[in-house]
Image (cartoon, rainbow, N blue to C red; front, side, top):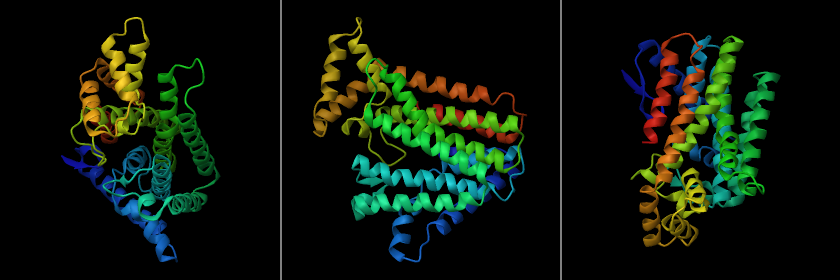
Amino acid sequence: MTVVGPFGLSVRDQALEADVQAGLAAVEEGLLEATKSDVPFITESAQHLVRAGGKRFRPLLVTLAAQFGDPYAPGVVPSAVVVELTHLATLYHDDVMDEADVRRGVASANARWGNSLAVLTGDFLFARASHILADLGPEAVRIQAGAFERLVTGQILETAGPRDGRDPVDHYLDVLAGKTGSLVAVACRFGAMMSGADETAVDILTQYGERLGTAFQLADDVLDIASDSHESGKTPGTDLREGVATLPVLYLRARAESPSGTAEDRALCELLAGDLTDDARHAEALAALRAHPALEQARRDTVRHVQEARAVLAPLPDCMAKTALESLCDAVVHRAG
């Protein structure tokens, strides 16, 4: 049994392990090649987050989905590079919007070079992804364009907030489906499609990716509050400090506003709405939310989404790749505690 990929995914088959390791190594080479420029400074800024590492969650899903066809088909690795480049580009833009100082344990591009260059570097990565995509055919271009539209729509919805009368939790789940689920779904779809898998497998794996991507982000929400250390390099309670209302906070607010809400619920909401840049207030809020039922409610929601992802896989033929995809579901649940 060998551990590969994010979260300690266990691969119990030597042939699959070899394919996954070779695929991820080829993707890494492809990322470095795609981020080279004749201008040395552009190469430095474009490779900044590539060299900082990362889980390579999306390329891993491409390589696993490709096992349902020909995993050595020529479009598999380039499509994984496209998906990861797109993800990296969004990180450059996200850090500007969030005014983040650190990403993957290193200074963010905007902190190092300023907002303008960070945005332009993200645009450069989008351009390189499009260049590779053009060689994969018009259907791949159409799929990626649709996913990118959903991704941007999710970001806009997050920025705008829920419309009047809309349940904030439903709104938030729509945001996550767009911002995270859409690109994870494309990773699975590209892997299956580029490998020549049949249409049924492509559809199943796409649905799996959509659900797993949302569950993955929900697990991060729980982890940000519940964990003493964060895999992404962020300190616990980062979202709280930045005033980001993730699922546990939304559930807390719903409880506080309901007829059954308690004085303690409302007091915690007031604390979270205050200035959490103060370390003492932040520690108090984090400890209170860790002990609140809203965190467990968010954890149950995460598990439900993971179970939906696992259930989608049922019609696929039993094989080690299917087992690995199911193991990813277990890993996401483990992240959520």
